[in-house]
Image 1 (cartoon, rainbow, N blue to C red):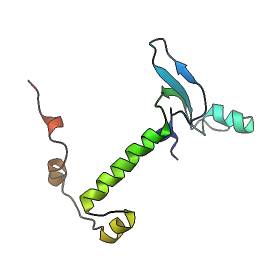
Image 2: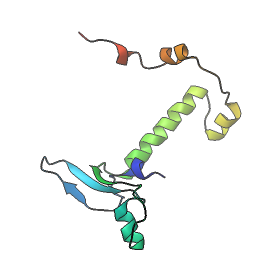
Image 3: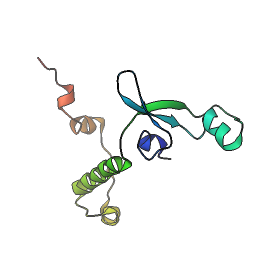
Image 4: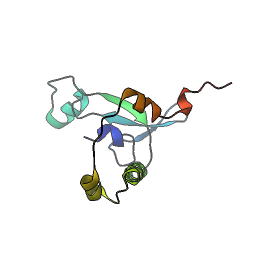
Length: 113
């Protein structure tokens, strides 16, 4: 279930297309889309998925690298070195709306002159 996360990478099916502006795109076709259903079974029975184009995003390793960095950053906040240590140390707390507002990014709410 990572279709949209990895969409537009070099490793996804389809050719890289170049738009009139010179921007690169790839086709994105969800497995429940009409087009995908026709390709794998010769007919469609629902209109659940979508087919569209998405910006070309390069190699999938770049996306995976960003995910790894995000996970490592999250682990550092908990003091855990890996997922197993996080599971052992995890303590869930209830956060109030005021606490949630206070721990969000402050700069986004500032007005700039």
